Image (cartoon, rainbow, N blue to C red; front, side, top):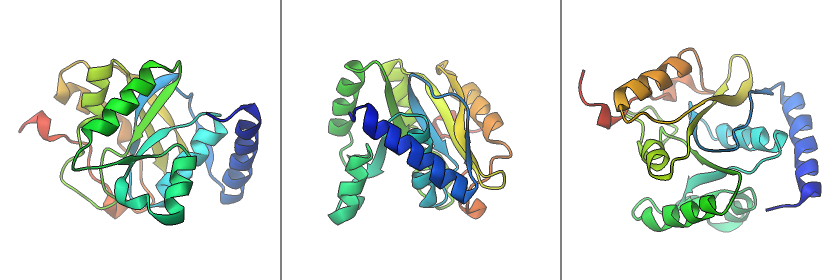
Length: 195
């Protein structure tokens, strides 16, 4: 983990870039959590999430598909805290991250629950399962293009009632609009069953 000086440089750089792009950050960073980032509709989501983390002086261990870790982009992703996820065999990656979470006072694991920048039918339930298995709470992070706001939303521990918990998630994201609204997937898990 970088020392105080790199964090200060990152914080100042984030503030300059956010101001130049006319975006702002809101909310309080949780000490440790599984972060759900939504809506995920553009590659700019990663840039804004990175600036949110830097502005708050934290590193997010963001899960990113393994195929993006080739060439210079791989170096950039690793240097910003991203973790390559082999979607065919995620177990090893998750075990390593969970061991890291046990050894740190502050641990933020970020996932784009939509799993893609295109509209889908369901969110991926990994964030929910990881939270249940680790005891880490879920924090709803967001970016809202019309208000040019990126931030930390509410934090909660899953109750085990998937539908009730997802009702809470849906209520939070009502009115939150991604950069490409047509790519938004409504917060819904297969595990909720049919209504």
